[in-house]
Length: 292
Image (cartoon, rainbow, N blue to C red; front, side):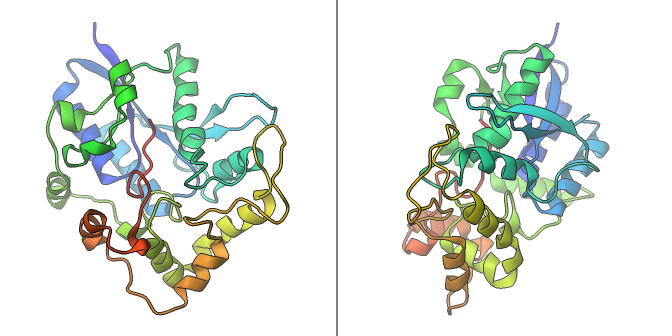
């Protein structure tokens, strides 16, 4: 009897490559359940790519979103959507912030509440434990991003490290030969205005598309005072803000209007390795937010 493996599909190239590789090489060992937790803040191209992978590769991809109960102590649940009905204006993220406030590098709860807990709720719905084996798309050349606690508990597996050492070059080469690809500007991957992205990255997005930051500004204004789900609030003149160094959305917009060297995604690894400028400091996963 084959073991069931959940596969966390993030909507990016690496998790797509992992999904296809698992289908082609491990289907005789595992029954796969592919899940995509939508935050509502991904660009449309990401959703279209997820839908294309699903249809082309027969993934039967399960689209999930956070179902937030406002009651104190109530767990995050899931609601199942489709490509067509998936949120595109940040609705799941908004509901999380309405209860828990503004996430930032010191209060980095958004990935858990919009992705990990959502998938765990779906697992429970199917009769599986939350620690049931889940594949996560982290490559061999970024092994430092592994969650070793989850790995040791048996909750996660990293196929692109355990089964087949895979680099970014391998993934890009695959999609060069594939008849479809993720057709988005790499700068806009994952949640477009994620606080884990460097200031330079965010400033570049703001310079060219300031409208993406309207959502962040709205969240800061409406929920910046919320300290926690218990209803406690912070001081009126000391609200929680999204960005690194206690910067507000308006700060990022203002910084983007000044002369600066724009973020170049082809230089990302170089920037991270040197960390020579505070503008290039990133979050603990380099701007990517994987469930688990």
